[in-house]
Length: 109
Length: 114
Image 1 (cartoon, one colour):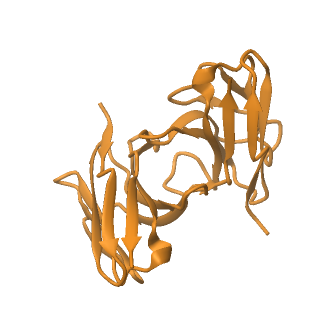
Image 2 (cartoon, chains in turn yellow, orange):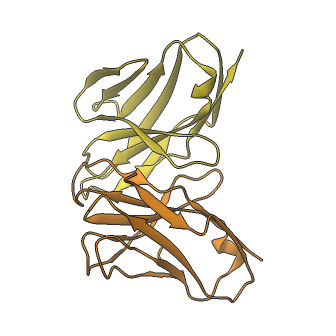
């Protein structure tokens, strides 16, 4: 079956670094997406990885290992506005997204 | 401002009533989607449309129907609402289907069925 696993909740301190992990099992693979969703709002696109390695985009980076079925989202220099849920989604061979339940990130001052 | 709009923002509905959730995009995207989001679960695809005039079933289509008469609009209808359809509904669009194009989401409709 197809499945995405990510931690339910994480807590970090303002100014610190946090890594949110995601493991995936999909029928075929066309990439791994990360979305950010603030409470009561729509998900917004953060990153897309289809090749192994690290993609850096400002304070956010995303990593993919296809052989391990593993990705992580790295957030640096955390700010209070980074408090949100982070959704991991794998794209299968039919270009359908399989979504994780999301990781709620709580930032403390 | 380009994007996706949804209406209503929220709704409380009696079981057995019919309800249509509206979705409009002005990005001229070919593909549109309806998802539901429930606590503790990932987004689940209800129905999708690859282009105007075509629709398809997603992971959880039962109890829902859609139409795609033109590029911009993609309404979702609950013919006879049941309490298990209480959820937050998101409409999304992307440039093309069958691709890795980024999906853009509307603000969501919070539906409660009593």
